[in-house]
Image 1 (cartoon, rainbow, N blue to C red):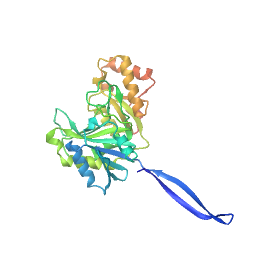
Image 2: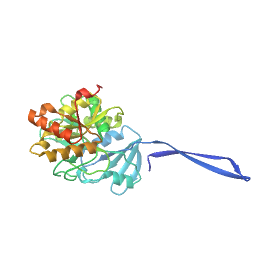
Image 3: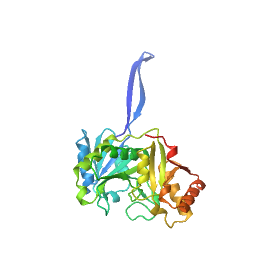
Image 4: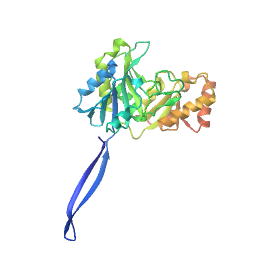
Length: 309
């Protein structure tokens, strides 16, 4: 199954030497962007998001490859896997072997946090250092800045539950993928994972995702795990964020390692722009990171460089 679609015109009006000559013209008139939505049934929020999605569209059952099953509605394909998210490297390869073209991968998942705070989050994936939870060490998966940032804005728009944390998380954990990828999650503990209303919200988010074409793309450096400054900027300005590097990844690291992280993050996000959460750092560290941004060929930007939404 391909996402490219064609119009074929047969013209039988040409004659050559008394014989009818059939001329076939093929015009490729468009390409559908396909989003692979990965569901793990043993992950309750993932299953609930899938169930909510199934109620929002007339999905076509595409069948199974013996390990994964596939359903399609427009440019969204639900891929239900038989193993865990973090164990399922390169899901797009399975889909494409089944005949499905994939542009972006979205893992539907639970979010775990000691705080137990109800949460709706999105985040890019990869490991800046060790790979404790899937993926490869010092490897980042391509980010999907425009789609992920639009998902966050839609979370803010659709969420109607007081006390729910709505935000980016910084880049962390696996699995591996060749395609632009992010996680969309419901948290933060067992008391919230079964919340079907949260799953309904995330299903609406997924069905409404539409990447902007006129936004700047940046990586974020600094701040904490829940990226408050980058969340705020994304929802206030025409800027989409790719990979996010928190302060805890910078602490105790030498210049070479920090440049490596920023370069990897920018390459995997398709941008040279770096938005620094300056207020999260002491002045000497801020000056050091700013100097490394400039010396590594990247460009530091601030909210003054962004157009308001």
